Image 1 (tube, chains in turn cyan, green):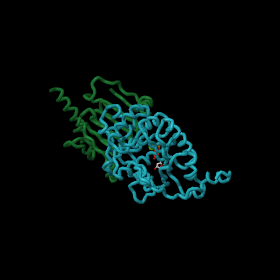
Image 2 (cartoon, chains in turn orange, red):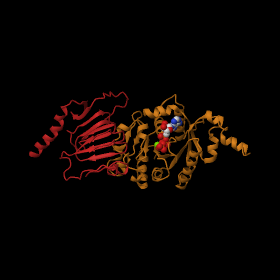
Image 3 (cartoon, chains in turn blue, orange):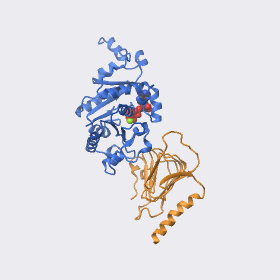
Image 4 (spheres, chains in turn cyan, purple):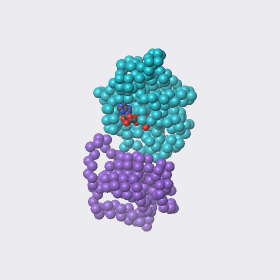
Length: 264
Length: 159
Ligand SMILES: Nc1ncnc2c1ncn2[C@@H]1O[C@H](COP(=O)(O)OP(=O)(O)OP(=O)(O)O)[C@@H](O)[C@H]1O
Ligand SMILES: [Mg+2]
């Protein structure tokens, strides 16, 4: 029985799809049997980021509506043996599936895969509700920006209300140089606001843009710093204890503010 | 019979495209539907006959026709010609760079490495020896294929 993990954020564009692609690829290169599920119906991206767009014949909707068998819709990754993608439909919208259909689908997938990673759409509406319906764990992605953290907080509340196992946080696009200068929130600040466990910090890395455009997840590149961070998170997901890299934390705006008002 | 799931995503009748009334006998006719617009990601046109697109088909856009598909522009999305099983259906485009091409039951896709030999010339795709082959479009050469379908269908119908 595999784990079903939804990757969500509330705010759009903070790195859910990037994270899903990299963690999936990272887990698969650790030898795990992994399936990635794109639930961003109507705005699918995961297939492009994985470089698998040209292989799509059937999608998630074809499966839940019975036009094909689950196996027929699963696309095998071109690099790794034990990695599969279930793409989203691009012509319809989030209302095309129901929560029960998602629950059933995930139950089916976890029979065969050790990790089922769900790429959640932005927002808190139907798409989000469907994406979390069949999941038992959640990873919340945020960037070090006040608005993204605010949305992450909202999402964590909704996940708790849905009785999801304690979600864990991924901080994406951190810029240690800016944190050092006090121009960006630091890790401690975000953890204090969000009050959940951290599973990893991914630095801003222009290699992500290159790899996304090429359809080759950065996690496969030895030289990418973001790739290294994703490799660590993948290992933590398997239960391994991996020490956190030192990000020179503790000097951000919030830390300074706190010090100023005498809380630090 | 005629469906455009694009109607709720911005394509289709709401934006002024009017479809001809559905007919009783799909596939066997040679009706042609003209799409005068850019077919964008998430838009899908399905038609029981031939489809001509006066514009481009973007990645994520889809054309499904029981007959031939001709794109008077760049085809980067997905096209399914002969969708009801007609292996004589062809796909033509000014620039044929599809994500994926399907003719009847055959599927072919773009090579993974970017090194696609983009000729910039009109090309035609058809099924030959159980595979989709793509070749330079020869003016006049298409008649052989387009007419043969009609001709053979008539022969079949006449016994
Ligand atoms: N660590 C990073 N360094 C640099 N760029 C990044 C990083 N993470 C993500 N990006 C870039 O941010 C953009 C948005 O990422 P992505 O598509 O993964 O976000 P998303 O949360 O899935 O968006 P949406 O809400 O639209 O689904 C992409 O252009 C991606 O390349
Ligand atoms: Mg996304």
